[in-house]
Length: 413
Ligand SMILES: *Cc1c(COP(=O)(O)O)cnc(C)c1O
Image 1 (spheres, protein in one colour):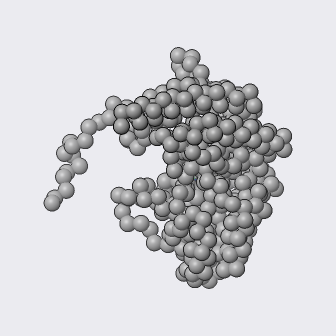
Image 2 (cartoon, rainbow, N blue to C red):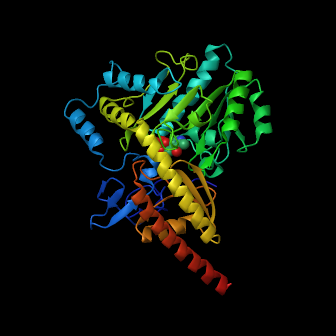
Image 3 (cartoon, protein in one colour):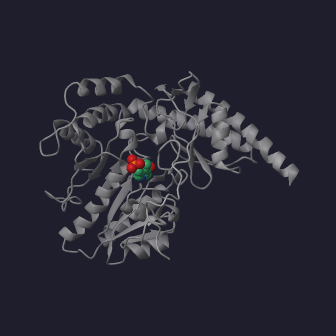
C-alpha cells in the first residue's frame, strides 16, 4: 500500500497546539512557594511531587532566586570554546563530595545518560577493546527518552514504533543475580547501568548487598558500573548520593533533576580512569555547563549537601513511612505496599494509580505516578513534619474515596 502524502490531512490539530505526548491533568499553576503551588485563582496545592523530584529545595527558594537574578545580570552563555569558571567550581564541588574525578555538564538527565553510555564505550575502545559495546540494563528502569536512553531502559512501550532497537543493549530482570552474572562475563559487555533506587519504575530500591555484588562482578570482568542517580541522587534518599548507603561506588554516575532545583542542568560524573576515552572533540554541548546553570546549581548543591538537610530528610521520611504503613494496615483494600528510600516513596495501590492521583488532587495534594501501579511521594526535601502531616491527612482522605469506589464497583459487579 502506498504511503499517504504528509499533506493529506488525516490528523486533527489539537486545540493546545502541542504534540500529544502527555495526558495532562486539567490543572495549571501560576506560582509556587516552598511546598505549595498556587493556581492563577489562588487555590493552594500541597506539592508532594516537586516537579518529579526536581524542586528539592521547594519553589522559589530565596537563595536560588538570588543566584538566578545575580547571574542573569552578569552573563548567561559563552560556549565551551572558553573556560567557564562556574563549571570548574561546580566540578570541584561535585568531585569533592563523590567518588568522581571529572564531570561533563548537560542540560538534562537524558543528555547525562547519553554521555555516560558514550564514556563507557569509549573507555573500552581506549583500552583496545572496541568489541565491548554491550550495556546491561534492567526492566522497570528509566533513563530518559533519547534513542540510547530508551534502549538502555528497554521499556517496550517507549521503544515501539521508533524503528529497530539498537544493538549493544541487554535487558535483564530486576534482581536476577544469575542472569547478571552470566551477562557480565560476556566478552562484549561494556557496562552495567542501574538506578540505585528506581524512580519511574515505582520506587524500587536495589538492596545494598546487590549493589556490592554488582561492583565486585564488574571489577572481576573489567566492566564499568554506571549509576543513574538523576532521580534518587542529591539528598533524596537521605544521603547525598543513594549509592553511599551501600558503600559500592560506581565508575560513572548521572545527575540532573535536583541539581538545579528547577533550573535545567545535568551532569555526568566519572573517575578519571573511566573517562580516559573522553578526549578533545569526542563529545560536547552548546548549552551544557553555561554560566547561568552553573551559578544556580552551585547554590543548590551547597544547600543539598548540608548535613542538617540530610538528617531532616531521614527524619521526615521516617515519619512518612511510619504513617503510610499505618494507612496500609487501615486500608488494606487500597494500599498494597509502601516502599522506596528516603523521600523517594512508592505506594502500590489496589486501585488505578492515575485515578488515585486525581483523587489526591481533589484533596489539593499532588503526587506523582509510577510503574507497578504506584503513586510516588517526592516532596521537596525541605518539607516540614507539619506539612507532611497535612499531606498524609489528604492522602488518607483520598484512600477513603478510593475505598468507597471499590465498594461501589463490588456492589455493581
Ligand atoms: C528523569 C530521569 C531521567 C531523564 O531525565 P530528563 O531530564 O527528563 O532527560 C533519567 N534517569 C532517571 C532515573 C530519571 O528519573
